[in-house]
Amino acid sequence: MAERGAWWREGIFYQIYPRSFQDSDCDGVGDLTGIIHRLPHLLTLGVDAIWLSPIFTSPMADFGYDIADYTGIDPLYGTMEDFDALVKAAHDGGLKVILDLVPNHTSDQHPWFLQARHARDDPHRDWYIWRDPAPDGGPPNNWLSEFGGGAWAFDSKTAQYYYHAFLAQQPDLNWRNPQVRAAIYNVMRFWLRKGVDGFRVDVIWHLIKDAQFRDNPANPDYHGGRPPHEQILSRYSADRPEVHEVVAEMRAVIDEFDDRVLIGEIYLPVERLMTYYGKDLTGAHLPFNFALLSAPWHAREIEAIIADYEAALPPGAWPNWVLGNHDRPRVASRVGPDQPRVAAMLLLTLRGTPTLYYGDEIGMHQVEIAPGEVRDPFERNVPGIGVGRDGCRTPMQWSALPQAGFTQAVPWLPVADDFTHENVVNLSADRRSILNLYRALIRMRKTHRALVTGRYRPVAAQGDLLLYRREDDGEVITVALNLGDEPVAIATEGRGLDGEILLSTWLDRDGERIDGTLDLRGNEGVVIGKAI
Ligand code: NOJ
Ligand code: MG
Image (cartoon, rainbow, N blue to C red; front, side, top):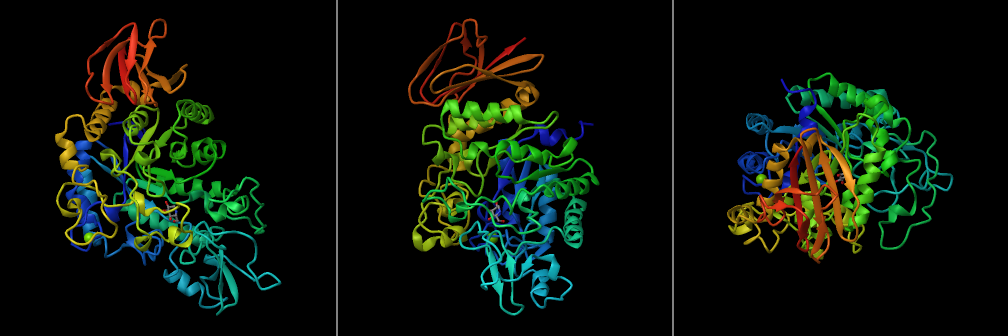
């Protein structure tokens, strides 16, 4: 019997955005049966767990992050039978399944909200956040929606405002109400009983708002070109101290079941992020670490990010790293055309659970979406400054067939125009492709324990070179990443960098002995192993 919790420490997570993975019923939108068809790709890749973005009943104002029934599968994605079949097929293949829990807000079409907005004295009224207008009739305070405009919507029938941190179609639940907590905890139990292996909790740091609804302070560092909600700091609207009580309660629900995981979506500075591990580690197992998503792609910056993160971790807390998700530009576009392989090597050799985003394993890039084809409500509300998320949500590129083999209909978002070459079939056949690099990195991580459980040790380096070691009692692994275009020669003498190359990002140096000098080509990374 493996140690409890080992799977989410030692495994590799893969995020599927279900709308865009594989369509099986010719409606242009991915679905659960499509995911089942594509499980072999994930098994060959070697990942251990899949996290599905929301698949629940939804009007899709925010593509499923607006839920109208927490325990129903949206017909667009299939049926509950399809879901059960997916869990079974995944488990049979040794893959864990993680669902997206969206407890901060519901859809405005959720029966709870329809009842709540019906009358001030409705029993569900207090499940949401209602406030009287300010004396001038305006909103109760200065809080802003993350998707543009104010965060308060006026409901004329009952003459009060309700709070929505995101779209007006996503009213925030009132997490100070014990009935709300009990209802969502029962939703968790429903899915856990069905056998899901855990949750990624949407905007977990938002759940509790200031009891007095104080105005947020202005952000002195705001500058044009950034989303308008950043004009104020979210001091009173998020990351409130009482949220940790809720996180601990969620964790207690998770712990009612055997060996499940609680992951929190949290965009906060590293010291704040760490508090979500909870007192005595009774919070989230893995508060998502998004530091790499916005990291300037320079060796010294990344070295500092890793050092700060490693230093901030509470004793016993397990680290994790994320390189891409459905809200941020594709890594291949962020780091530039020559660096995605180096980024992959970084992700899969750092200490902590790595999360991959679908399509990054084939180097999918951010797709330009014509103004008339924008689907993302964020981009529609705040156009023209590059906040759009459609470009990182385009259909998975499976083959050179029409629509990249994703659908036989018109896909809900356009397929990238490089798909005839950049696709799973083609890249599988190319021995030195990025896809085969991802497979090799994952295999290497599984065969060298030092990469999973070994210590992280930075090694001093200059310029574009990032150097570190992973070591346990049996092996020392050196990772040398060249984040620049120029070749570098590194003297290994006295620095313990010698050994044998386990992998180069170009997949052409396996087994080479390093002794005296390590030569790296531009944009090359290598992993060197040495038994001790
Ligand atoms: C975070 C999710 O990742 C994002 O896609 C969504 O729009 C917001 N939360 C609101 O639920
Ligand atoms: Mg479909």
